[in-house]
Length: 87
Image 1 (cartoon, helix red, strand yellow):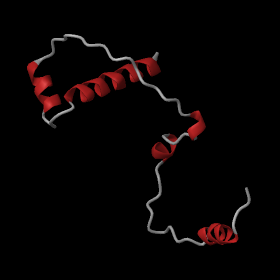
Image 2 (cartoon, rainbow, N blue to C red):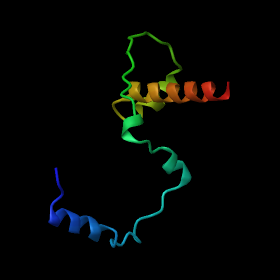
Image 3 (tube, rainbow, N blue to C red):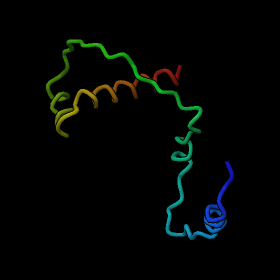
Image 4 (tube, one colour):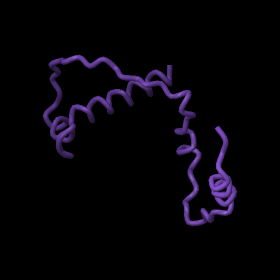
């Protein structure tokens, strides 16, 4: 498959694009980028459980509306990841 003359001109013109209004990314933001071939499609297995948590924690999780179980899972995953990182 060969590239068209129009597409080649478009590619050449791109390097002259002004990106001065784009904010620079922080090192933390850059660290989040991964090449698509290195990304894995991770879909954890979900399990239904009954859990008792403090009422104020449940209210806090629900305070942003629906999706509180997803938020709870995200908080727990972050805690797990930090615990794994520290050994």
